[in-house]
Length: 173
Image 1 (tube, helix red, strand yellow):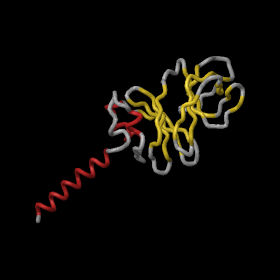
Image 2 (cartoon, rainbow, N blue to C red):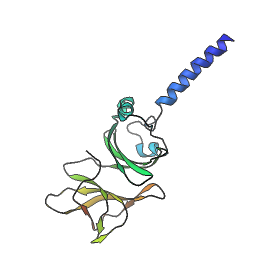
Image 3 (cartoon, rainbow, N blue to C red):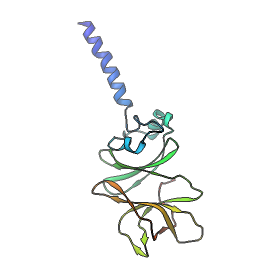
Image 4 (cartoon, rainbow, N blue to C red):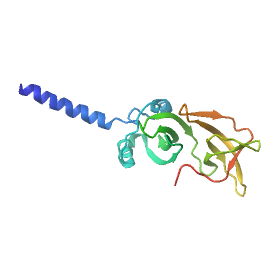
């Protein structure tokens, strides 16, 4: 009888510990397909420093968040030396989509908002990586994605003729 109780206690300790340590970043290995491994996983609702401390092996660093809509947010993370934007459900904290973006602040600016294409305003919310230029009101886009709020996904879009305001809005400082 005592052996059965001790076995249950030991088993619950190990199961409890492994489920606590498991989060969206637990399956990530540098050199793997990080975006694919994150989609569908859940981000734990805890202090960022605790999450970062648990994943030093992949160089995890939170670099900010943006509110996208009532139900969605964009989380900006450095993982294995690369920057990723995670489209997350606010209530369930589930990752629905992930894009990798270049991190070169000397040449590029990140932008979240509305842009124009051939001088016509696009109504969709756009994430863009813009080419940095001084002294101009709008910048050309190097790459851009539209946020499909219904599908909870990033949709790659053409940058031909796209110009966005010369004010970085993502990630926050």
